[in-house]
Length: 162
Image (cartoon, rainbow, N blue to C red; front, side, top):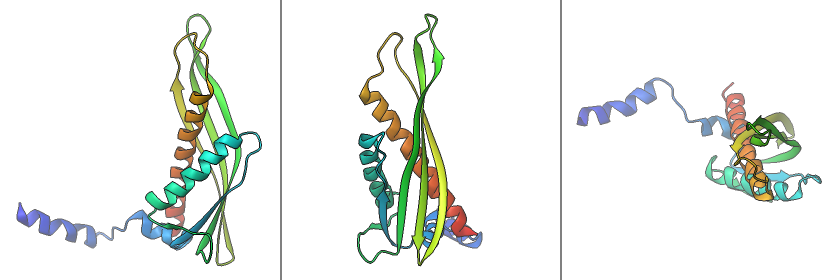
């Protein structure tokens, strides 16, 4: 068993494995200034998106959120958010919804611009004949935004690897 633990690191080193954060650093750098544009149609959701981006930069990427002397600026513009019905019950009441968020992202590093458009979705069910409240809508927007941010970071890692 001890030999396996000694052999395992060499296996990963010999195959050229690098974590995705290594590739993301080529595009983003270490200190990132996240800027989220206000969506006039959904101001509450935009505030959440700002917090989610700051949290994702720090926790998912392991980078620093900064406001001066930054390596890169990440400008996020929520271009659209929709809530649509996917399924109805036998009485015609909506029971399954899909929230979709589309984000336009512009990353500026050393006067170079990289543009991304990502979308995230989140499906959720409500009880038959119940009213869809604001809390459920906000929660769906949050989850769809997190999904879109995960796709964004995957695209950044892919671009950094090439």
